[in-house]
Length: 233
Image (cartoon, rainbow, N blue to C red; front, top):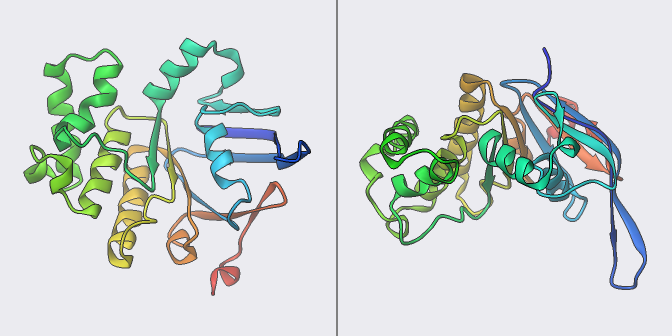
């Protein structure tokens, strides 16, 4: 199956406070198929979030390339890249970054409105996505009135409402209790398969990562697949 999201020989370097350069990603490659759920684990500071930023076109590599639906990001000018990022990539973070003064449905509509869709078109699509996630009764509630799990599901609905090709999740359950975390990871997995989305999630929780189709660990700037036996604490 042709990958939706690909990274080839990525290198990313940064300059430390002492002025010395250090390499975070060192020739890393990855391919994610439609409907596949890939979890990435690794020590704090190993470069997991850096990798997601490169996959999501939020940052550019020092070498190598990232391709979405067969087209490299480097071919896009800034405006075209921003449009592709909004239209074809969904993001979910540990902290949901919802707009507090808006309702759940207004938050979910935001990517559609930014993309030029009319409010009359965006509202039913946002409502349908909230319904899929079991949040239709809370659609008109402002976000501070929602529980942590409900807020994260609103963030997930916002990430999926424009029907992206890839969904990138950075510690999406890091601030939730274990039961809610497990339910959200199952929901992520089911939605990725149902919608044919290439899902990449970063997590410290290996029990949750084990729900993925593949688990990769980021070590010394490269990815290595983890066998089932290695997932046991």
